Amino acid sequence: MISKVPAGYEDLLERPIVGVLGTVSPDGSPNLSPMRFTWDGAHLRVSHTIARKKFVSLQANPNYAFMITDPDDPYRCLEIHGWLVTVEPDHDAAFYLSLGRRYGDDDILPPGDIDDRVVMILDTTRFLVK
Amino acid sequence: MISKVPAGYEDLLERPIVGVLGTVSPDGSPNLSPMRFTWDGAHLRVSHTIARKKFVSLQANPNYAFMITDPDDPYRCLEIHGWLVTVEPDHDAAFYLSLGRRYGDDDILPPGDIDDRVVMILDTTRFLVK
Image 1 (cartoon, rainbow over the protein chains, first blue to last red):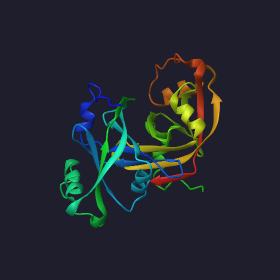
Image 2 (cartoon, rainbow over the protein chains, first blue to last red):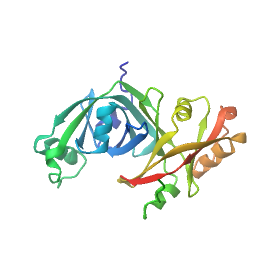
Image 3 (cartoon, helix red, strand yellow):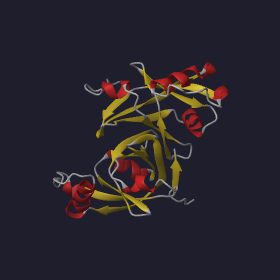
């Protein structure tokens, strides 16, 4: 099932809003994390490290949900569903740094865990206005 | 495992912030929903109807996660974990209406689905600063 971005909600994908990523742990419980993201019209991209729990969870169960809430209206929300499709190395943390700048962090420095940084590319199959 | 509210984050539980409730569907995928809530020092309470998907999900898998983000600082977040412990009928939608007023909706009217309204009482076992 592929659905389109609901009309009038495109801005939530374009603006530098901190979203909430929902994943499922191997024990079956949900986990939530605030995440910066980019949107290319088909995929969400987030920065992560291979050592962390959320990454392990998504390898075991690639289903995710992502909530983007309008900072100016807490009842204007877009929920996105899909799967983790690709993990790419983030050489020199280039994606991590560009993401920081997108969110207004002009003085961002390379992270301490630079060698473990990856880009998680998330397929988007369903958009829901909540 | 029971943990305390992290010092300095109590306000996020007291203020009328719209949180994000994460549950797991019977198919193993996560679902997210914006939710109003109350906090009594031990439990979260949210309003719901027995007919909706999230309610069915929580009956099958009572694990939840709840994210509260400071509207004034998107990087100040509290994640709460626990289980759905009790479902009580919301007679005359009294809880639904009080919740609306807590969130500044002084003109709130009884909902159309008044007969299906319940109060979901969520145990809180773990608090994480994210």
